[in-house]
Image 1 (tube, rainbow, N blue to C red):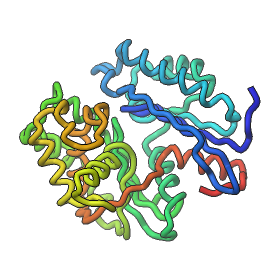
Image 2: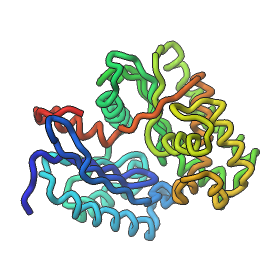
Image 3: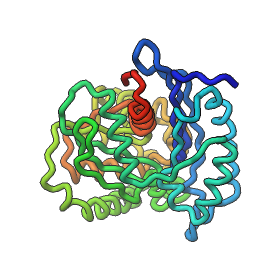
Image 4: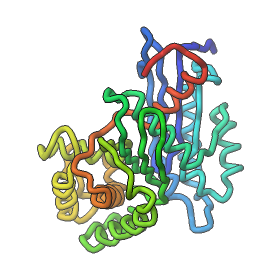
Length: 312
């Protein structure tokens, strides 16, 4: 297969979904030419001993087989594939990555929380218009939450916390049941985790607050579709979402929210509990959404390291 050296790609094996994106440098700028998402729920398929259940393993490998075809035209040197918190939790991560790499035909890196934070910051900074601004960036994934203070491409402060929408939903909202008591328990657990890092962030100052990735982008979409807000997430608009969700009582009844996909609804309660706790602890008045995050950060990083003359 002929490869195109103007193509760059990134894929991440996340705790909730596996994602891939392919971009092409066109006229000096990156343009997305292909993207894919496969709901694997890796974190939900890991038992207490770190073993991955066979059905989840099968879903993961099927996703990678579909990715392989779509990544085939991209030069290997222009592709980076990473595993995040879910893969880090696996007891047999070595054998999983070996088989996964063979299926994909590409090496897979298990990255640290610090590297995840660096790439998220790069993704946000790469498309931000307000250069030189110090930002608080929040990224809620399936198995971890990254809290970052960044200025342009530099991470000033970062923590990767072991709480995510899949883990929290499975633990606090068993069988999809949603109640005020369950939500309070999830919020308190998130608040306790945030308290453990608060001394590190207490004196930090930032000008803007940016949210990225699935949970936060979905919350923003729900707020807009319900007519409760448009440009950002506030505590008031988030409380409206939470109130409506609690009234629904079960993830299967979250179709009350226009445009909320069923696969995202299944992990929405845990993600909202984390988001609510973060906004309260950091006294966030308004959170804007970045369309770009870790995958785009990977691509910007690859292009910069290869001295390729293309801009975000």
